Structure formats: C-alpha cells, structure tokens
Length: 273
Image 1 (cartoon, helix red, strand yellow):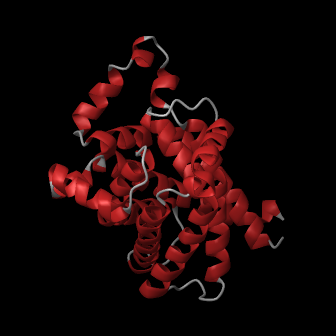
Image 2 (cartoon, rainbow, N blue to C red):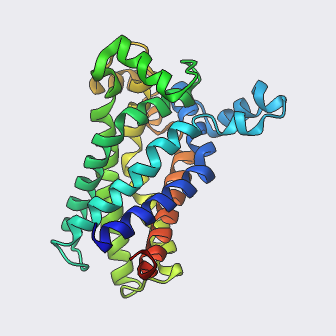
Image 3 (tube, rainbow, N blue to C red):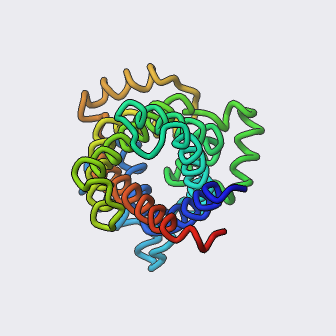
C-alpha cells in the first residue's frame, strides 16, 4: 500500500467516525421530516415528544440508526478519499472546475456502489417503520423478501444526489482554496471553503435526497419518476425541500469536518509510513 492510500484510509476512517457520532441526530431528523413533509419545528417537536426521550433514553431517541451509519460512513468516507486521491494523481493538485466536478462525481459513484446496501438499512432504521433488530437481520430480511435488488433500492436516486454533490463540492472547495486563500491548507481556509462549498452543493442536490428517502422507506417498489410525481402532487416545489435545514447543516458540517480532519492527517503523513 502506497503512502497516499494509507493516508487516505486513515484520514477517511477518522473523519467518518467522528462526523457520524457528532451529526447522526441531524440525519435522523432529516429522514423523519422527509417521510412526512413536515417543517423543521414540527420535526424537532415530534422527536422531543418521543417515548424514548421522555423515558430519559436520549441516545436511543436521537442516535437511532447510528450503528448502520457507522458501518456505512467509515468505509464509505475512506473509500471516497482513497478513490479521490488516486484520481487526482492524473490531474495534479491544481484542479480546474470541470476536472474537479468529474473526479468528485466519479469517486462518489464508486463509493455508492460499495455502500448502497448499508445506506438503505440506515435510512430504514431512521424511519422507524421497519422494526429491524440488527444490521445483519435487516440485510437478511431484505434479501429474503426482495433478493439482491432489494439492497439496491434507491440506487439511482442516491447517485443523482451524491455524484453531483461531490462534484460540485470538490469544484467549489478547490476553487475557493486556490482563489480566495492562495492554496493555503490552514484550518481557517479549509473550514471556510468547506462550509461554503457544502451549503452550495446541498442546495442543488436536496430534491434528489428527498426522492431517495421516499423510495427507500416505501414498502412497495417505486421509481424516481413515480416518487417525483407523487411529491409534486403532495406539496409542489416545497415538498422537494423537506428536511432541508437539518440536511444542509449536517452535510455542510460533515463535509467541512471531514476535509479538515483529512487535511490535518495529510500534514502528519510522516506518522503513517
């Protein structure tokens, strides 16, 4: 294993673990809001009134889906950074906007191929509809009912969300660091560039996230077109932005934190040789 791959795995694993622990409640809130097309206030109020929270089980109430999230995010982020680092070798450090969009989207598409089954399980855990007792139990139940195709339900919608998000994020992130901060890898440049890029990419890709959630939490198979039409009948354009506030906060903080940790690990790459 080359040094760059080792750094990518260590940096990706560390950032994935920390981000998942910190921001899982925002993902839970986003999923619940997207299922029922409720406002941020009503979504928070519903979770605050849940029996688990009333009984004092704060972790149980707010960190539902943490286990599948960790199973998905840690290898997923590591896979993304490994793929990204290898693709960047062919372009150099000074990426143009189109090159950044291309390799960001490609790296995320490869990651989705590897992690989609766990993305499905995580979303269903967070929905509270399916009553799974364990991650392996959920996988077995889905395989028995829908075979392998069942584990990839919502795959196309996930690609429509993640590939553009990563492409837009990487292009914005690299251009901001290059133009506004003259290529600096300081904590301030990484943080500001990450927050700005995360907000912009989340705004553009949120409708696909809502469609993905609806497909994966549906008890019957549905296509992107069918769910899109149903959402529009349900609430028009605003329906496609259900759960936007917790998602934009989470994705922005996750992306910013992940890149900050990754950049800091890269600076200390001599420790991973």
